[in-house]
Amino acid sequence: MKKGMNTKVVKNYINGQWKEADYSALMDIENPSTGEVIGSVPLSTATEAQLAIEAASDAFSSWKDMPVSRRVAPLYKLAELLRVNEEKISRILSEEMGKSLPDARAEMKRAIENVEVACGMPVLQQGDKLIGSSYGIDGEVLNLPVGVFVMIAPFNFPAMVPFWFLPYAIATGNTFILKPSEQVPLTMQFITELIDQIGLPDGVYNLVNGDKVVADAFLESNKVQGVSVVGSTPVSQLIAAKCVSSNKRFQAMGGAKNHLIAMPDARVDEVVRNMISSCYGCAGQRCMASSAIVAVGDEMYKTICEKFIEESGKVIVANPLDPEVADESMVMGPVISGNSKEFILNMIDTGVKEGATLALDGRGLLVKGCENGHFVGATVFTDVKPGMEIHKTEIFGPVVVILKADTLDDAIQIINDHQYGNGASIYTQNGYWVRKFKLEAQAGMIGINIGIPAPVAYLPFGGMKESQMSAIKAQGKAVIDFYTENKVITERYWTEE
Ligand code: NAD
Image 1 (spheres, rainbow, N blue to C red):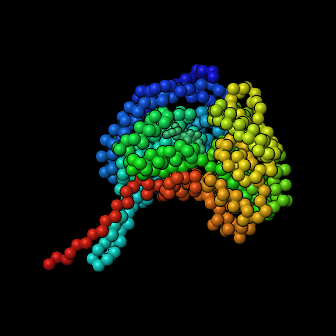
Image 2: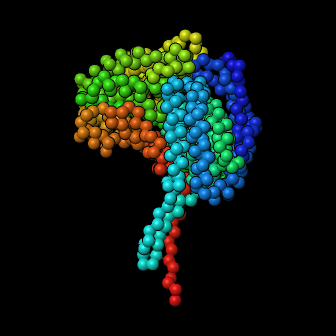
Image 3: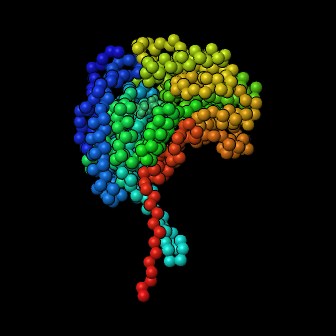
């Protein structure tokens, strides 16, 4: 890897102060398009986690009593600062993660939207009161802040995923510690510079960079009341299990393999255009990316294979910050790392070995001027059978498998037999099929003629089965239950003698 001019070492932000981390090692932060080192991230020791926990715990004692209107006031400022700096942040994000600029901008819009929703906390956090739950007795539900919360983030949405949690945790009166993915720490480093300006009391928001060592220190602390993790299923399951054994509340979101169903009446040209952006946006590294297409009926299977393969072959693969393509809506950047690319290439070999037809091969692709980048071209397998390794495994790259089903029931069965259940979409104009799909497909987020059914910030975000190991989803109103103790009061007063 070539060292760039600007190799900054990211810092931790603890108790309202920037701080050089105590670390076991410094890891290179790489621009995945060029292979250039653009900074270093400290793999912080457990001591750093302890400092953040102490700061967040001390801050909680007064933050929880701050009136809610005053707790959201800094968030209004944050929304404004994020908006003003949206383009700058999008470029940082695109450089370290490799997604296209339009994708990075869309990610920032969703992050800001989450801050705006959390600004509604004076309404969202209101409790309930039932007068006369029995004779002379009233019942009341108070939504009270809980304490210190931690968020452990994945690499693929360096800004949006932390914002599914951060503004809600703070607005509800809790204190918060973020551990970004060590692969993409620069985006939240810059955003934390903005958070530093919004007037939060020290310790309410903290940032600790690092890997599993830091995460474990949070998980082992009895001063941490709750953890949200978004990551691969094995990691999320491990963290969820540790939360159970240390009596912490948790939200644990895992991997995905999202299916798109093309019914015989689907409007093929529009559908294929939609599928292309769903499958290849973010180089297939969205948790809502689709990577399995199920065509219903021989005719639709043949047409979809033909058109999808043809359109896949036209996907532009480039450094997303190359000025010639930077504003194109459908540019596919690199995958996150050399390791990730190697895994994807191995999965393509697996598909060939298990007998699927490699109809479009994205291996061996070189992007001029980016010879050290981690690019994989659009790859399509046809003749894929349910349960093949390339169908079962989350490949998290631009590799799409196309399967055939005879009926909608068979297509739904393919989805329901899969271990993941994040998103699933159907393309049809038939109301009966839509209704059946909505009710029966086992996925947490359903699309009707929409390839990426990622809900806006006002609605809950989350999956089923191994895509989510907890009941409470992220963002919107749903997350308030996670961040508050629903204390129930039952009260009676006797009348005066
Ligand atoms: P990952 O599981 O490798 O890492 C996620 C986070 O966990 C990182 O911060 C990492 O440092 C930390 N971590 C890793 N090993 C750990 C351990 N043993 N103990 C404690 N912490 C540990 O995931 P990733 O590669 O960064 O992200 C991609 C994955 O995230 C994909 O599987 C994707 O589907 C999933 N994802 C899911 C959603 C969703 O909503 N379901 C959203 C985004 C990403």
